[in-house]
Image (cartoon, rainbow, N blue to C red; front, side, top):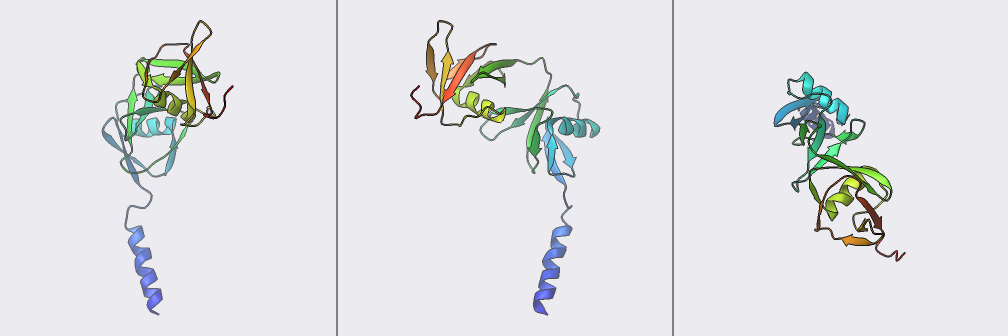
Amino acid sequence: MTTESHDHESHHGHHEHGHGLVIVLVNETPVKFHVHEATGAEIKTTAIAQEVHIEQNFILLVELPDENNRVIEDDEKVHLHEQLRFKAIHSHQHVVEISVNEQPVKLHGRRATGAQIKAAAIAQGVLIQENFILQEELPNGTSRVIGDNDEVHLRKHLRFTAIAPDDNS
């Protein structure tokens, strides 16, 4: 008998807690979601419906704890949780498309470190890992290694390769 009443109690406690509601910030404005997963496009649509002054064609960035922002593509699914912060910005803010292992990778801003380039590539589906060695392919046919903390001045058509640390090719 005791187990039953105890069970009932904890069950009841869960439901009082606005079940399934997640509040995230978009441009510092709270936006309520009733789902725990949404695509970039859905996040923008929901924010617009809740009076956030952005437009559907804005670029959505998620603010990460280490001060970096990562672009969320319209069809990319995001796991929503409390305190998640997004920024939506005009698309004419600086976006550069570079290539990593022959695949296009979009980066925002004018500079990025080796670690940021690899993180962006991984997030955008390039099959590499954080510990891979990043090299910039130079126009003269040589390449230079970009360390995780080395800053690269981003411009269009930069080409990088990332290789596993134990691959000496």
